[in-house]
Amino acid sequence: MGNSVKKDEMKNVEIMIGRVLQIGVYISAFVIIVGILLWVFKGTGYNSDLLPKDFGTIWSGVLGLRAYAVVMFGIFLLILTPVLRVIVSIYAFAKENDRMYVWITTLVLVILIFGMVIGYAGK
Image (cartoon, rainbow, N blue to C red; front, side, top):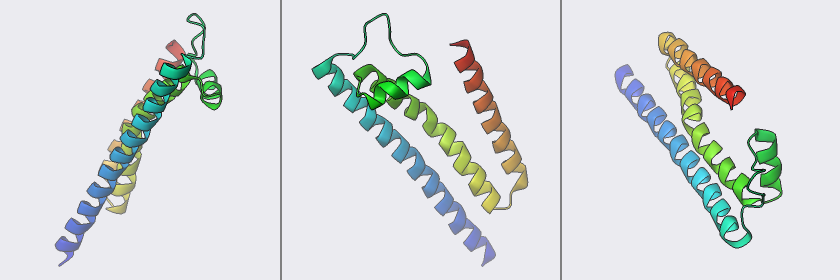
């Protein structure tokens, strides 16, 4: 009986993780398509030598509906989706009281964040 409940919980967690990945990909694809349409109809929104490279500039470009910034934001969302999956996995393992995998997955998240910070600092 208890094993069946645990299998149902794991199945629900797997469905939830799958939904997170689907929604992340759909949202990022939508944003990228909007950016491409803006690019087709309005151009990049920037001079070729002044393309935004940091998050603050990209965000202000998104608010100004500049095509290049919108596409870059969509790509950022696509990159962020697997990170969100790791966060949901930590929650799932915590719900299962599986401390070892909570620690391992948390370590993976820290490594991901550390890698992104190093990548951003190195540009």
